[in-house]
Length: 269
Image (cartoon, rainbow, N blue to C red; front, side):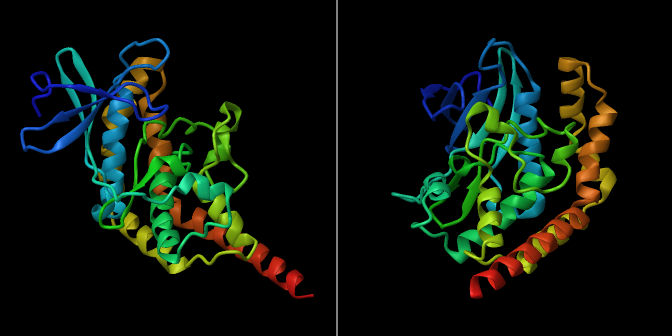
């Protein structure tokens, strides 16, 4: 995409940093986000590269809900270019719904969030509060703004799902929406269909591990240049999340279901 010669229009989309809209050669609108630190302004290519990695993971889990995103390095412009998704008017405020149980999630929404949970587990992305999801004009929930993927990759506590794990709490951020949903499930307030989760993991299992690992080589090499981290160590950890996804999520869900049964039984007494 020729973005050097595209007309950029600055837009404000909350706390996501500087962003611009532009029109691609295909006539469609896109969002360009420079790969720079919000604090220092320094160019950090890994920030844009990881967004493309996230798109590739979304394509594995469910191509129909993937948000097209590519990393671009065009002279003075470096960053991610993401499709501008057409959304429904007066869409659901999933962030507000995390706090207000009087606005219930529909079962279809819950099913879709289980798809997003599989994606964000693979991405080790805990910046997955309700503001980072939109509903397109066809009613499909789309996960956006995956720049924080793998930020907590080296934290052992991030390796397995846990409704109490919320590393962005220290920044005053809302917990991942999955924590909210799984907690309500454990309390017997909503239903979650295991077969839905398992079905998306089937698609992950079908991907060759070496091919999966290769998707993240540019990102890990960029992080190595920026932080001095070992790219192979990062690749090992990223691949391990894929290899162990079924065991880790299945164990988590089984334990959560037992807590749910105990809570339901207690409520009947």
